[in-house]
Amino acid sequence: MENTRKAPIGRPRGFDADEALERAMLVFWEQGYEGASLTDLTSAMGITRKSMYAAFGNKEELFRKALERYTEGPAAYAARALEKPSAREVATAFLAGSVSTTTRPDCPAGCLGVQGSLASGDSGRVAQDALIAWRDDARARLRHRFQRAVDEGDLPPGADPELLARYLMTVANGIAVQAAGGATRSELQQVADASLRNWPPV
Amino acid sequence: MENTRKAPIGRPRGFDADEALERAMLVFWEQGYEGASLTDLTSAMGITRKSMYAAFGNKEELFRKALERYTEGPAAYAARALEKPSAREVATAFLAGSVSTTTRPDCPAGCLGVQGSLASGDSGRVAQDALIAWRDDARARLRHRFQRAVDEGDLPPGADPELLARYLMTVANGIAVQAAGGATRSELQQVADASLRNWPPV
DNA sequence: TTCTTTCTGCACCGATCGGTATCTAAGTCT
DNA sequence: AGACTTAGATACCGATCGGTGCAGAAAGAA
Image (cartoon, rainbow over all chains, first blue to last red; front, side, top):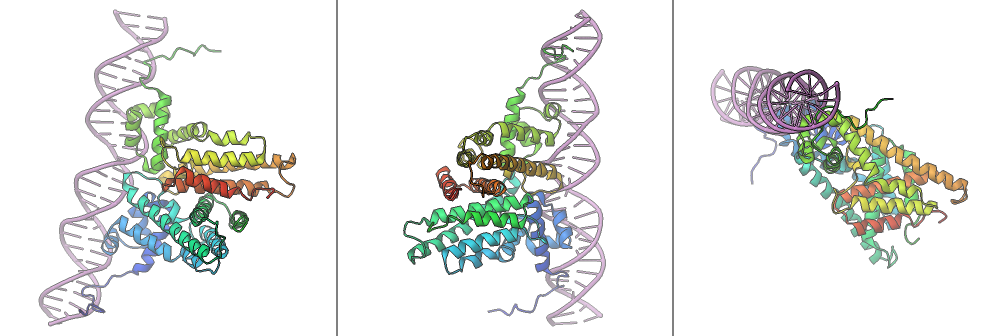
């Protein structure tokens, strides 16, 4: 057992890594993985390329960490929605969170998990795969939650958790695209409401 | 009136411009605007940079023309759907076309109109704006069609054409994102069916 | 103080970006 | 035939890409 705590030998870094990561996340959110150059990123983070490299590894690692921060920050609505007591409330909260996060006035429009890298050349394929996995993970969590709802009788026995999860993700992803195209919060909330009008049990 | 027909002075081009454009469209579809380099494009088109430049202008123009071709080719389902006799059939055909086009085994997964450029740096902003306009146009056409349906009594008087169009585009865009992430045709068709279960009049 | 370690700023790397100049080959016109 | 016009191929342009080497400054340990 080593006492490595509170003894970072050498000159301590002169910037707040958390805040720098936040800034990087916003750049990726707005410009996507390939659209965000190191110059864009480091100037927004307020540090040099070398400092970024030392603190975060490389562009891919930075993106991964920015995605984690996004998950725990702006996209935390998803985890919160999963804890709602009923399946209907889960669905409602999930879409409402999607709407409000993709249309926040102080953040880029849309969803980092969608527009970060939907299609790319070779250089961005890693980010693309990471986001596919990210969306798959969100869908799996919804599916498990709805499976539990079926088991608990909260959803009718005929309900299909797989389909419900896929449906919800589809609407949420569509909302993200709409938001990126300039749709307003109230317009998208109406869409979210409409998409839940046939939620089981009918 | 000039007889410019059938008299292209100079050496005729040695490639089929239509087919070259088709190939370019597929590259943009798969890799997005920024992810598709001139090298990717011209090697897929089977021509040199100079020939591409002479025939299509530049990368932006090529993208625009590829988008036109996409609209009249793979995305022609949208125009066809608008001609269906009832609003319900319009909606059903629109989503079915979206599903089949985004999951064609011989084409890239997803929709060029979505993943071509959802977010980008400065260099891709023109393409990004072009796709926003493209999606807005599709939505406007749906809205007009549904307005007509309300006027004709095909939709109930309380139906909101704006909301219905936005809802349909949202689901279609979500389907495109799902397809880009590897969802299968039957999975997405189920989603399309589910999303129309509460179509007016209920 | 001295040593060690790390951060910072700058210049720089090879590769690739979108876009061209140049030269030759190939076709149509007079 | 010869003039004229354009396609095609090669090599190249300046700019930018992601990523580094290096020198010096700064801070903790001894």
